[in-house]
Amino acid sequence: MKRIGILTSGGDAPGMNAAVRAVARKALHEGLEVYGINYGFAGLVAGDIFQMDAASVSDVIGVGGTMLYSARYPEFAEEPTQLKGIEQLNKFGIDALVVIGGDGSYHGALRLTEHGYNAIGLPGTIDNDIPYTDFTIGFDTAATTALDAIDKLRDTAKSHERTFVVEVMGRGAGDIALWAGVAGGASDIIIPEHDYDVKKVADHLRSQRQRGQKHGIVVIAEGVMSAEKFAEELGQYGDFQLRATTLGHVQRGGSPTLRDRVLASQMGAYAVELLMAGKGGLAVGVLDNKLVNHPMTDLFNAKHHAELSLHQLADDLAY
Ligand code: ATP
Image (cartoon, rainbow, N blue to C red; front, side, top):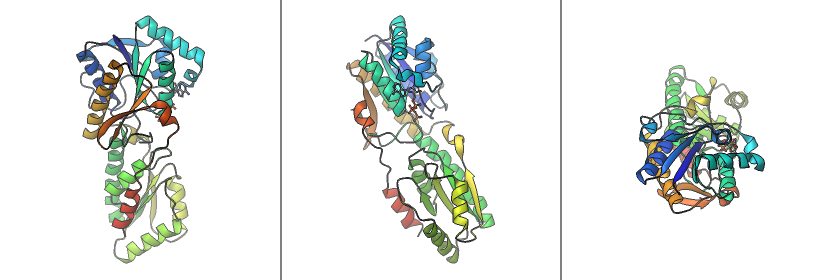
């Protein structure tokens, strides 16, 4: 193996650039040539590919988004389109790839591996919804952004004795809600992975008010329902001076946190090591603080599990 390609695909996540940098720098350090592929699999098929040197990834470690751009390109699920991508790999002499993205991107990476071009997947998504890894690149930054917003909302909630229902991202996963909720001292956290009862949430808020805490923060994951809708339901059980806030895409941006930068750097370098060992079709993860790899096919049949002990913890601490 002499030349590797890097692409980012699916939704962008803070820390993707740190991962691109790590892959590029580690590969160059090992004497490999490195090519950046713009716009994910769409750019691969279009031949939007350029050679990278060490300077190509200067000053990107702290920058959000992805310098390689990202695209949704469902056509890549079709074999003739994949073959067009492979023509481009041959044209540029690229033997192997690192694909940074989510579950869908791993499918594309696996197709390339099956065609004889080893690809290693790195989990780049704010949702933390990928199996066989405790954390994905971008999650820590997104949860920290959500926490920052919760802290700010608490100031105004306190001043006016209001209850804020704060909707955070995560798609079908409750991880951002759980982590930002615990860190933000939420009264209640509503996630898709755990039952909830609106009346109980109302009773809880009421008992907090009776004890003298007259403001409240309820964090809800987008995978359950909108903040507006939940506030509407909650309002039927009492007057809590409710306000609904949806944080939205602000959670996708921003400079990656220390944890995301380190995780992306570790994973990027590890991906290059796996490629150098002739491996492909593997997804990189971090479990109990150790870098791991698993066949992508295992991930497709597995489910991500949110850290539900945090839900219990939030309940215990906001009794
Ligand atoms: P996110 O979690 O942010 O949505 P993702 O990687 O799951 O990231 P998708 O849009 O599902 O996002 O997939 C990204 C890209 O991967 C698709 O646009 C497509 O180019 C490619 N892809 C997805 N599914 C397949 C598939 N079954 N076969 C080949 N390529 C695929």
